[in-house]
Every structure is written in structure tokens, then in C-alpha cells.
Image 1 (tube, rainbow, N blue to C red):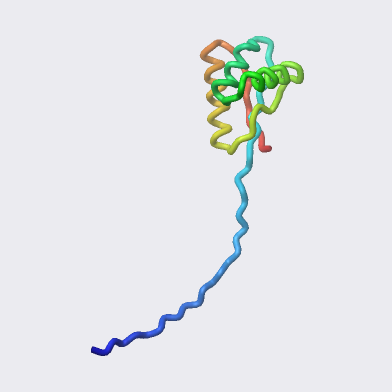
Image 2: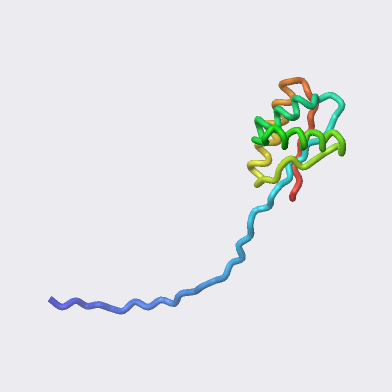
Length: 103
């Protein structure tokens, strides 16, 4: 049996694409005169998985400076953590403010 085999040639195009990493976002917590320090520390430990010593340091920074970056995350994670923070604050009657900004 004779097989008829044709060589297949195709030009291969190699393109260089610039791969960019996604933006990182700062999660910023703002001070207010109503939210207790203990509640902020609890949020930082439970939602942001901060050890107690770091949570206390961040809370003090927010209290003294008026605001502080409490973490840097991808957009989806930052948005989820900020939303969880605000929801928990509202459920507990606190007006705590938490926002995102491009890092």
C-alpha cells in the first residue's frame, strides 16, 4: 500500500506581548470618634488575619494619624475585605470608614 504523504509547512508567527501585572490596592481605614479601639483590633484580626500585636499597632496608627493602610491586595480581595469590614461595623452600630486606592 502506498501512502501519499504531503509535507505540511506553515509559517509560525511569534509575537511578543507585554504582560502586565494587575494593580494592587491599598485598603485604608479611617479614624472616627465612635468606633472603639477594641472593635478595630478585632476586625483587623478576624477579617485581615493580622496577629494581635500588628492589629494593635495598626489601630494606634489609624487613631493617631487619622488613617492608615492596613493591607495591600489585588482588587477583588481588597474590595471583599473592605466590604466585610464595613458590613461588620454597621451591624455593630459603628460608622467606620474603609476605602480602596491604587497602590
